[in-house]
Length: 84
Image: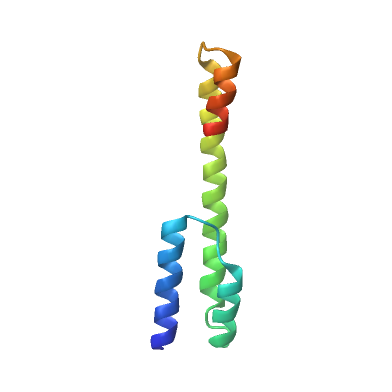
């Protein structure tokens, strides 16, 4: 059990630092190691990850709309759009 807690803590820390998507290979290993007990947690993480990525997309669309409203040169608009 100590090994599983260590792996879970490492995965949570890595995800918090990187802000990346779910590491499916790690979760597959955890699911196999726990004989399927980790599967519900993996499913929940996948669902939450999908919701967060959709929220980020919506946020980027709002930023692009704000950039389009600005009264600036087209070159500067393109630069701002790349940064957002």
